[in-house]
Length: 583
Image (tube, rainbow, N blue to C red; front, side, top):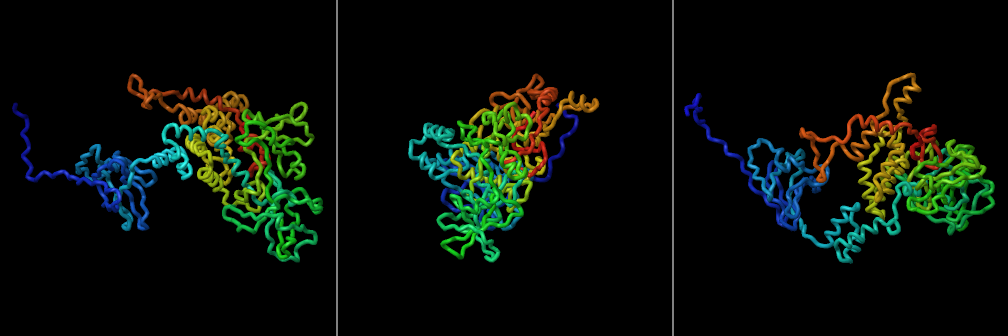
């Protein structure tokens, strides 16, 4: 048929042919790395049994991984913050759009961005990726622990490697008799042996005559030494060093009086140090040139079971709740009795001790006072050296030295050396889901123990019920503050007590529990795909009306009063950030 408008005349210019990229293969295993220029590249995948990687090489020769292909699989981003994006690997980030992609199952069109530093370059290299039992073992351990250890690889390689060996290893990791749980709070408290120059609401100092009292070599003028001093022999003391961040001491500068002393001088020394008390000295009888000065050290006390204790849960709880210490220090040190809750009731008992104390009126009953402990509230052990500091309302001799790094140090020590590697790896994964952010917790960036107590929830329940984890974090003062349901009040309560003011309960935690911690936003199929309704829209699990109703549950949660025997800088009531919330 005749067209209504004529066809345009042919162009006089030749048609531009599409840019065709030459196919680049990975170097053979063992050959030198090949330098690549920036821009689009069509790269073959690795051969079977080999690894092929593209890296950015710095001027110092370091290789920063960008993309990888292994065992004939397609190219993908490497791990780490500098990896190429999927867009750059698939070629969608290339300029011009004229190159022929020719993407197949055996090649990928990779775009290497221009380098800012002229001293850097792109390189591609191959490594042997063939399989063996030891490599398979190492790869498997990397998935379930924080890294492989040669003794673990040797252990698994000594038996027939396969599903039975893997199951045996996992059972051993989940058995607390073979792999005891490593409590981060306990690790910190046992090594919290900082100098303490005065009693505080947290604790008092130890005594110079007590076992493992600390003595530092005195290098001052001996004419300042008082007439009354101790005499020790070298075999009574052991050398100890300090690992305290930013202020380490060389071995030999400090010593521990291992078994203490019953010298009559002890009777004339107060049971704890005071800020204005004179220094106490000792001389080595077998070396007249060596003088020692007593170093007051914080005395945190056992006040609850260890994370691995299943029996005798009350045996390590302070029988008077710390009442004697309160009296001895003139009430400088607070009562250590832990408020009773659904999480520690098995540690509780009725005390008729006349000196028993409590920080809450609810624990005063007919016939005595209810005394309770806190899991992992163990005493410090001076023989484990001075590693961590304890903040309090009173400035200690080591106040403020690197405390913001302490919780990270505890985590890395557990990740590197704990025997319960699987438990620690699972706890870490849970902590990425159920999070608190220190910057959202008022004035707490330098605190250590409150965050370790929270992290121990995941350590304890790593192989247990997710419901128990949700229950325990929901009573955490840190979660309540971070997700703003602390002191939340119902509409009816506000209306009744505040002259008819209209307000709703805080909905933040009610929404987070559903959206982030449990079911999510949409109904999912078994394969993880979203279920849609008749109109093709995602099917929601809950509505805002559900959130409003759920928020009513999270009202009436309050913090307990500050108590003793844990790291705390606040002196006010209702500021306890370590014990479960009260209703």
